[in-house]
Image 1 (cartoon, rainbow over the protein chains, first blue to last red):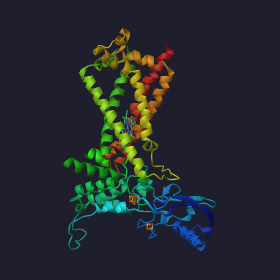
Image 2: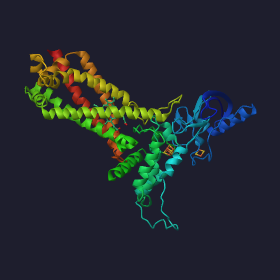
Image 3: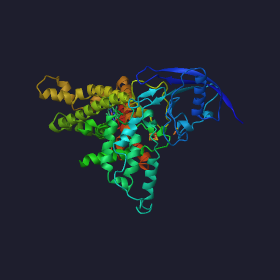
Length: 251
Length: 234
Ligand code: HEM
Ligand code: SF4
Ligand code: FES
């Protein structure tokens, strides 16, 4: 049977990148516990529009946990209090009647706020552009079994490749470090023969871009991996360190 | 220079200086244990080591090297933390959630480091100032009183004097507590920074970290507690 709850949402409102932001609290009644967190925000926005107020701006796209667009810092956790899910996969049944839910944008100097809860995450795209690819002409698609790859490496590469670039790692990190993201993107290629060829140049270029964009120095707190919706493992960071240090030693 | 310009380079300096300091602590703690065995078996190895590590060229070079490591470690600690504070941005979160997997010490390395630094200050005043420093003054022809010079290599006597005072006992134990927290995170973090980790080794590396931290701290604490006991018995 459907249950409903009455809640308050305390939302960060900020008119533009340069404007000073503040929290605004809205009361919502009869929110279905079967609805998703973003559906709850849709209800809030319908209400705001009907009252001729400006709706809350927030990022979202696929709403099924694969695109990495949704990016809300809910009650002190990126992607909310539940683990291993994105904001769009968060259900309202995780909250209780009478709760006040605090919703903030990602806060990181490299992810400036565009408006309200929407931040500019192009910094991650720029890191990918710096080297997160394989630049050989692959021609036609070869058979999957033409290049033998140990199961272990294939699995590790696949796990690293599950990163959706959402930015929760940098948002969760007290040091504003993007190491988990960069580590995942370096690892998914460094583990496979196709990516190994450019591994050293890639690690150097992506780390240099990450530093240039103003992300912090990783101190291995592990908050990133604890909050990552795709459970990207912290040990990828050790692999990135290894790749980077070996590349620098060779120079 | 990539050791200052890149984040991983800066972390490497932090980890190498940190591990070198840990190795020094392991040596220092082991050497201290002789001050207990001496008292128990009526021998004088500890003071022999003190004499060996007095103001002679090799001990002075080692002391300078050690001071250099400490300065590098602290300078980089502040360098990194200021950059990290900036990277997080001026606008802080209203609510900071906790993750059970994240160790408390990993988020408070700088605060723990400052406590350690204060402890180092006290320690230099209590021991180094009465031992190697007195000898150095003597070598440079600065007048030091006869008894101070005579006691400069009598480590056991100075240990006895210091830990007869309960205030110093408490301060030293607090200091050792801070070192324990710093090292339970520091040792595995340093190995991780050097790239020496993977999913299989993660629990092992953390275990090594806890063992090393506990061993170092217990060896030091044993001396403090033992000589406090000696003062009570006297
Ligand atoms: C007995 C003296 C000390 C030892 C043995 C020691 C050891 C270590 C080790 C092994 C690390 C880990 C490095 C890494 O994560 O790569 C570390 C990190 C750190 N230390 Fe120390 N440390 C000492 C004193 C200090 C002092 C006096 C300060 C500051 C005033 C300090 C501040 C820090 C900070 C902020 C970090 C974290 C930096 C990071 O992880 O990037 N430490 N220390
Ligand atoms: S590593 Fe995890 S938290 Fe970071 S961007 Fe990728 S999916 Fe998001
Ligand atoms: S909207 Fe696509 S992952 Fe959440």
